[in-house]
Image 1 (cartoon, helix red, strand yellow):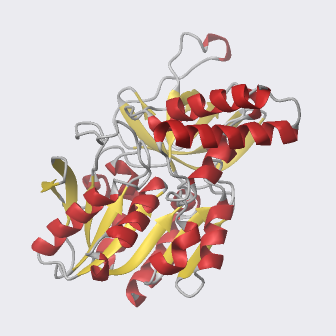
Image 2 (spheres, helix red, strand yellow):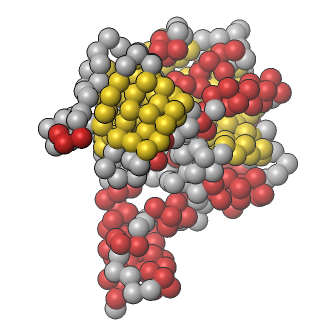
Amino acid sequence: MIQFIGGWLFANGFRASALEISEPTRTFGVWVRSVDRNLVTLGTIAPMQNIGHPGTLGMFWEDGYAHVGEVVNVEALTVTRRYASLTESAPPVCDIGDLEACPPVDLESYAFPSDPSDRGMGFETIEYKGPLGPLGAWMIPSGEGKRWVIHIHGWTAERREAIRFLPAYANAGVTSLVIDYRNDPGTDRDPSGRYRFGVTEWEDVEAAITYALDAGASEILLAGYSTGAAHAMSFLEESDLRDHIVGVVFDSPNLILADVVRANTLDAQIPILNIRMGQLMKEVGLWLADLRWKIDWDRTNYVQRARSILTVPTLVFHGTSDQRVPIAVSRQLEATAPAVVTLVEAPAAGHVMSWNANPDEYERRLGRFLDLV
């Protein structure tokens, strides 16, 4: 009985945290202790991966945005980093004793606050016709317009996720289409009323590719970030347009949903008597979730079918410190389809943060791949 109760709680938690459609939210919890033109000291009340993450991050506050860069000093829960403001306003500075009254800031991987113009790139906001209704996208032209890449953001993410990657594609003469899809804010919801992790979202990817082909594209690349990779894999498995794809780029691909759910469920969320009991409760919870909401765990395990799905060169970036999608997923993907998959492991990088950890190396590897496909 306790296994069933624990499994029921597990399934309910999964529904609330992963299936229910929600607006993108920010994860605050970092405070600015001091700031000048070149350095910022950040503090937190509990360990937080982003505060000391290597490389370049974006820092957001109510009316401003900045880059934080190289870590200069670490002292307990305080980190001093290089700082470069992208706006005129300064972040709120908090004394040690006034955290409740002082607004926190947010550190994010997107690294750019608005749109492709943040990287000095011209773009057009377009609308394409999805199967459920109109969908928006940014179109960033480059080259002769024959080779396009469709950028597919991750679960509960947004178009901004792709901004940091755009110059590498433009330098290779590839036109970028950064798309919205069902369940994004302002779009139509999936008929199920839930996120489907590629099972239905691939239809919107297909619609975006149709737009690109109608606009003169003859070769298409897919760039999938986190769960966006699942949408890309599902498209490759289901669509009659798959033959137009010449290459694939994934970053932290969420391609075995059940494993990601297992990894992201804290033992404290279900009544644990011992490790074995907790594992059993999780498996019961997965079974109950599938029974209640028709998840289809086999369908959302794209790695097990990767050899038949992936038939074109595929470059995968994955951080070794990814706390959301275990790097084991990408290692399994490469082992399953070694003829086409090349995995680039980024030391110490978090979820979709390989670029942030080392932008130059990321863009070098991506540029070389684009030159070869």
